[in-house]
Length: 450
Image (cartoon, rainbow, N blue to C red; front, side, top):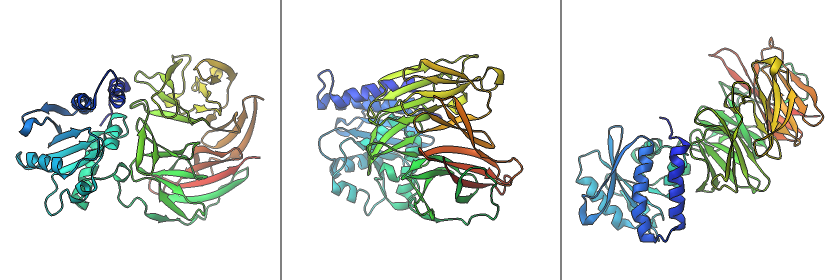
């Protein structure tokens, strides 16, 4: 399914954050009354059929909605203290008064009491899923769609008998499984440069980020982390398609779809431009996040968040036929000070330039760039690590000097260079793919810079 546009969701996010602050004289009681219509519009933004239904016992107002052929009844509470067993039991009763196959969803913004979590569904068929603030915010901020979330929760309810599942545990319940290291292949790549082989993996794997001074690798839907001994791979999260980054404050930043979340244990704090499929992200030392992404009309957007707050400033970078960032910003990267370096007119060598934009999105520097290499990451503040299919080089922006670091002949069995990510100012990791579609292999290397 497609996610709603950032324009459609931004108004809902602003409304939700106003409810959080109790703006404009709102009380906790009136907030609850305004919260239900917000939930309804959020579900509709994802293409679901949803409507408010007040034809219930004791004047209770529910939200009924449908995902494919499954009907749901949702009750939301935004009250101080955790919800106990009583309100959940009443929702279960209303569910049983519907046709078989109808599922109840209870959303408590302040969580649940321990007895409610322990006793719901015990000794009888589960009829209600329990959601809380982190689940709703994950939907609102574009971290996960309601369709995907409910699919995952239903799987856990059916197989594990759980009515409540934390967001960090919605995917593969065995995500902490250790994968033994695969043996290194007999084919040694022929490189120039100081290269250290890290691991060989069967199939296709892609580098995503650095975590605990080692690369994270995307295999299928899950990201894996190489441990310091290089002997094992361990999943960083059970959530499919999620990416981890380490923030300067030592906390983890989790990226998924169009959302940025700071995570500590099982606690998520979502702050991001809703549903913006960003291509590049930069973490300042003070905790600010800079993002570069493609807008709804193909324009490139430079956004900033202040300590994981909603973006305070969103800028459109110049984009037209003669002055265009590379497709999906794949050739763009952030410098240490938050500036952006990118190659423009990449398909016209005679007009190709390396352009540096300042933090405000204004062009600061333009250099001729006849090289087929493209910027991939930055080391030592202002040195671009660039790559093509068979070469990795380093370009010093200030000195305008280029040096070749790795040359890989197209005839060697080690294949082509795929990903390059910065480790420290002295080293980078890169990966290569080799073989045909049936015997594809991925090798990961560490390149030590001089």
